[in-house]
Amino acid sequence: MLVVSPIMSVGRGRLRNLVLARSLIDRAGHLRTDPEKMESLWQQAKIVFLVKDRVHAGDSELIFHSADEISGEGERYFLGLDGNSGQSFFAWHTDEEGMAPDIIGDEELRTLRQIGAELSDEEAGLAVHSIALSHWHSSHPRCSRCGAATKSDFGGAVRVCEVDGSQHHPRTDPAVIVLVKDTDDRLLLGRQNSWAPNRFSNFAGFVEPGESFEQCVVREVEEESGLVVHSVHYLGSQPWPFPASIMIAYEATTSDVSTARPDGEEIVEIRWFTRASMKEAVNSGEILLPPRISVSRRMIEYWYGEGAIEDLIVQDGWR
Image (cartoon, rainbow, N blue to C red; front, top):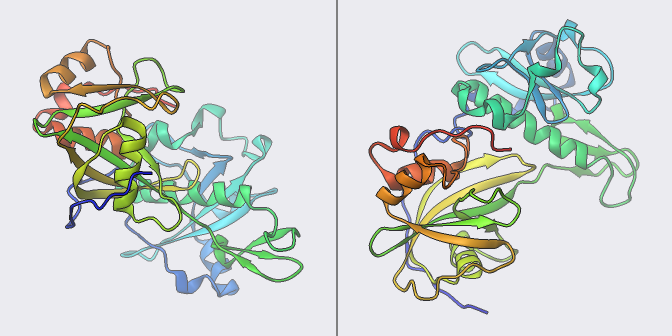
């Protein structure tokens, strides 16, 4: 077991404009306990329509529904209020493909990966909140204490056991993602076995019980790449509802690259990049970078610096 004490420098996050961390909506949690208020807000709400994990949307915007357009089996989740106008927002979620209104074509149901980077700040926040809640509700139909059925309550913020009355709240799984550099400012990326042969990204992993974020950074990098890192700096964070994570981004430096090697299980290949070699590899198609909706892509652009958007071709289609 590797025992570490990372050298930390904690300050404000350095990543800006993370796609899924731009919500402008007031979640107004104090209103969730008032059923009459919830019903009133539902009747005048703009409603995000979800079938499983897909939202009704155009190429670059959500398509909102009104309460009188919603019928059939599904659940409603209160998302919050516009802080300026007071407009209420809800999500309506069904796992049944046939529950979509006839006006919705299958091609109009889109995943967050497809449209997230094109949405406005307000709509990106609504979409990520809606999808995160839908995943949680779908995967927690029963009480973890007694096994009885649970039902959605408090505007979708809680599930309540129908037998013992216990409340169950959504949980988010924290995961660190790390931008690993050497003392020459080269960037190290890895490829997972389950990815396409030329897909590379930063190193990441879930925080274990009793572990700090910084400890997780050092452990995950050592486990996946063989490197011991120091100078751990916080960069930013972004929700990642696939199904229920939040990515906490850090950068870290290694002073000894001689131990670098993939773990052979989760990570099967690692590569060092200078800015020039990355530009060449990306533009030739030799490597594929993560999509721009992801914090990993923004971390790579942050390291690359000026010209990242122009030099690193935006590649669509990663699912």
